[in-house]
Length: 514
Image (cartoon, rainbow, N blue to C red; front, top):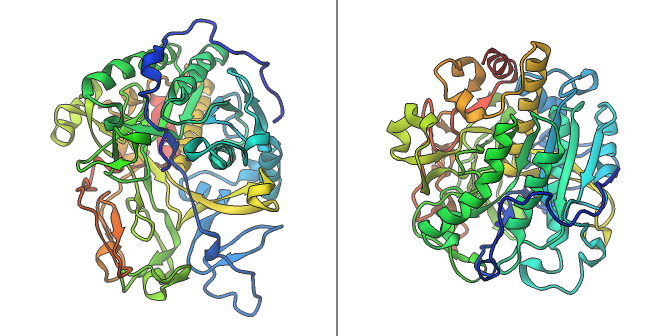
């Protein structure tokens, strides 16, 4: 998979009760690399807090950390809850009676403890949380162990960050929901059953959890990494059977659209070769999954760059690039030139246009287009995550700022669970196939979504946030557009932010109306 990102277990199950797909042994070695879509702010952006200079602080981490950054902005739960139209966390009943399943390789050995600390820090209710290992538990003792490459020393550590982000920020939006961290033990590399095992775990969970369960998948594999479109189509059909079975029982599936803009990889050793054409990833491109792209919430601050050189030297940030002004409230497409990261999105080379996208044929043509919706995914404008896993790698327990569409997907999943909660209160069943609802003419998208349109910040080319074309860093330190073209951000539906970001009150009301 590609990087874009315990109260109880359910026993030591080693197989699905009724597997819907079996991957032949000969095909396993050909499966591509799969990674989570998560990005973490560099520690060099933070310093000890100083009472002598409170002005210009972009982010302050909570105790026991307390470090500050003057360049990287961050959000606490109530700040993003307010931006998207939800009330304070402490008084929230959001998500009561609903189940949200967060799917990750490895999980985290400190998931329950870290989530409890996160909840207590921000005054939320006690989490209703469990970890499920239907294929067996991972060996957390080997996080710094004997492996090499992508299955090597820090594979479990990287996935623990992904898992912790998922559960803490699904909780931040729907704190009363039953949260399940669905984890699998193997490393996600070429030659290992990483993607098949994640899909087997999801297939098991479809049968194990109630109707209306909302799933969030923060991982993906580029379509080109599967080889030919025909080969990918055959493989995807086996995996899609799980999603179809879930939709039949009114479950809903979300997946991150990716963190590398329109750039993807081709079939190669560990899928390490960048392709020359725009690319999208699976599973978010599946027509049975709602794809979640990324935005950058600038709430209480406004980026104001005057030079397109992010760093003057390693770990030395250029004030002319990172400059910002206090005040403002905007939400552009997510495209951070300083790190070469931005929202995934584009057109499938495997799937034809699903019927529900007929209304946006002028944008997608004859192909499945993604994403369908979007949410804050920026690192500069990221979310606070508490972690204490793997101290031999991470050091003492602390807070970090995370971004990526791995942050977007669990939060939109949580707001959709709130919609199912409201539907239940209205005597209706869960929404199930969300794409069929949000593309429907009866769904009032003008009240459900904040449309994301181009924005210009400062005076630099990369300050014009208008598409998902990735920026590369030249030897001079200046950023320049990548050769692979991106897709434009426009009014209405587009291939970077879909219909836009859900505004919770209108989004929930429209889910209830369906």
